[in-house]
Length: 355
Image (tube, rainbow, N blue to C red; front, side, top):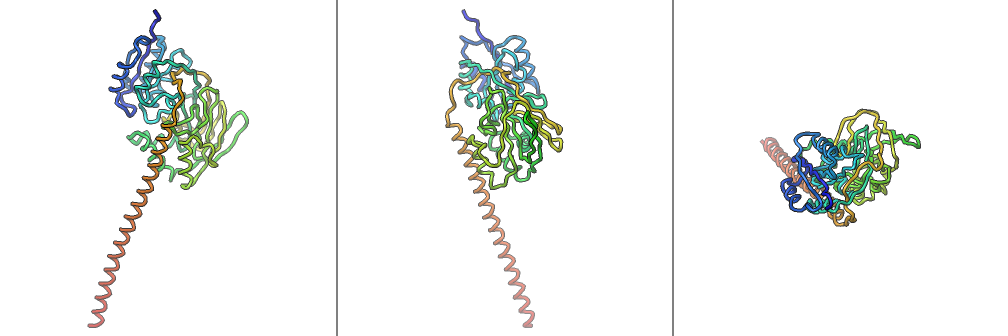
């Protein structure tokens, strides 16, 4: 009789956007007990997920499954690098960048079915100033928005879009120097994104051609742009064609150094952190075992998201028209009142002259 594999499901009761009780019930209902013995551990404080995963490695557990957002996934994955214990994901965060790249379904029941299939892949991971990341990291506007998003108290795609569009109107680009094996280049940039995976999450493809298994990171430099560029940049970001925009410069490297003029925020997998002027980013090849879907992703999810983006911009346009109409109405009312007062003054003055 074949010995069963062991799985530990790690649950962050706070992070993410979906109900955890239902997911735990589905785990119990759908996990293949002929293959797996499983246990569930709930995190109790920041950093606890890393400790649980590290203990699982010591105990030679086969798979540690993250049930939570990108932050929980990052915490667990950093304890699994260069081990035989694989990372599994049941996505319930607001971005799910790594899960989407690995073609893990966003629907929890289907994600559990992927774990039952047990398809293992060995992927690269990155480090920014020696802090591991598995999806993307960066400086500039995306790091700034990550900070605003973390402080907003709300989650979800529309919250992220609202923060992004609101802050993009006032954010000032910075000058950066990027040093790699071939030399140093200087850019005035809105953001610099380094991608191990192709997207931030929510199918926002900031480094659309990045691969998890090529030993390299894809780097996207977004140069300053105007309000008129926003619709095309947004569409291309979600349509996996951002690199075709004239405001975008790209490169590929194993290791880079970023020099900036001031201390500021950086992000790793969407988590913001204050850092100094000098940043080092590198890719570590074949460092993490993961459970991935063996099947290709359908286009439906991308199309649905593009519809959300389209609706959002349409909503902004309508709101703008409503505000303009209200302002015109208000001005009309002010003008009418002013004309009324002027007419009264004119009549009063005329009566006085006749007297």
